[in-house]
Amino acid sequence: MLKYAEQYKTNRIYHISYQKSKDKDRYFRQHETELILHDGAENMLKRLGIDTKNLDVEKFRSDYNVLYSKKETLRKTYQSTEKDITTLTRKLDNLNRYLDRTPMQQEITGKKHDKNRPTL
Image 1 (cartoon, rainbow, N blue to C red):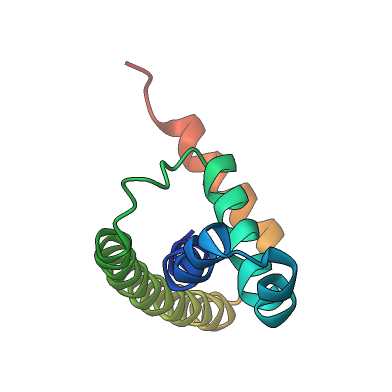
Image 2 (cartoon, rainbow, N blue to C red):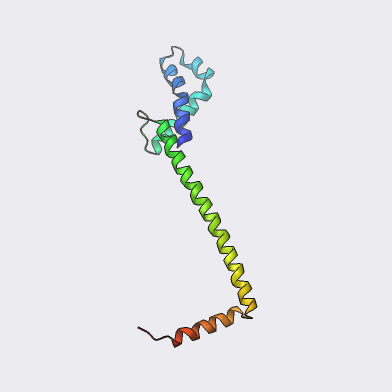
């Protein structure tokens, strides 16, 4: 969305000049790329429901930066949690090896403890 807003704002000058031009074919051939980028960006912004008349690119950029910083914070939290899980899983495996338990024995012993507990 930010990319399209920037393209629209950058190439709007060419679109305005094209509309004011006396020889539109000649102007279009000279600035075809800019005009196509403008029209494509305008089309995408309208599809996204953004009013192109009151377009504020700086607001989009600041919103993007806020969301990106939140994403980075969450990514770091996720990575550290993932490392913690890996470490704890490794410790659990080591503990099970030390206690000479297999996963099947853990399930059986876990069920025995549950059966001995009184229900409330």
